[in-house]
Image (cartoon, rainbow, N blue to C red; front, side, top):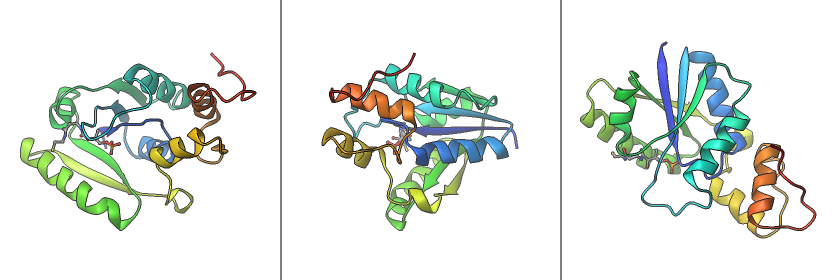
Length: 167
Ligand code: PNS
């Protein structure tokens, strides 16, 4: 299969996102990870920070490109010369929202197909929101996010002795 776009807030990227990115990179010749604005959410990390973290943790994937995205996803996908949107599904609770998004996006661009990746079991209850909550309260997020992101979270919440992010 050709080119696919994996959109999301990625605030920040978690091991669950990375699992989907890596599995999609096996299936598609080219994958664009699109860091988007979700009008329902106030992000902790700026767009630039989210893109930078994703680029760092995807550096080992030769066919993955990370871009920021403004506006409608359906337009962005077409601009990229792609026709496939990748989404991750965890529990049934994700389904209603994702079905609505997939159907709306196909209304906006008739040839747009959404492909869902089922979560790996270890990531079933993982989300950027819970990671931020745990990190904010001083908990250990090492099993939920790449080490680089763990360092960036520690820096964001200024936990003494958590170390500095590497360049
Ligand atoms: O990680 P998230 O926050 O669940 O990702 C949601 C996102 C960013 C993929 C969604 O909000 C989105 O597609 N935003 C772009 C604007 C858009 O096209 N909205 C859908 C109209 S049907």
